[in-house]
Length: 118
Image (tube, rainbow, N blue to C red):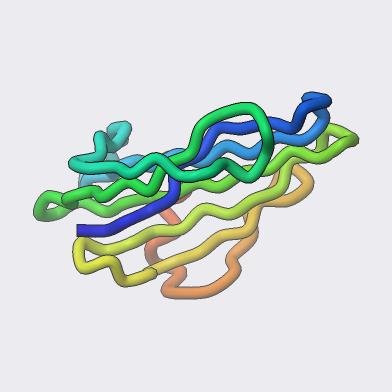
C-alpha cells in the first residue's frame, strides 16, 4: 500500500495552479487511473480546490505513476513524474520543464512507464 497526495487547486486570482494524478501501468503498457482505497481530506496548497492523502493498493505486475504539475503566473508548467513499485519504492523520477521530460533519478529502464502516461 502506498500513500500519495492528490490535489487540484488554484490561487484566488487563478494565476497559479497545482494538479496531481495517480495512474496504474501494467507490464503490457496499459494505463488506468488509480482509485484510492482510503483517503483523508487535507488542506490544499492554494485557496480554491481540494486535496487529500490517498492510499492505493497496487496489484501484482503493476506500477504506480505519480504526476505532480504546477502552473505559474506566466502559464509555464513544471513538475515531475515518479514511478513506484508495489512496495512503495521509488524506481524512477523524471522532471517536466519547457514541454520536455528529463531523467532525474532512479533506474532509466522504467522510463517506458512515464512515456505511456505522458
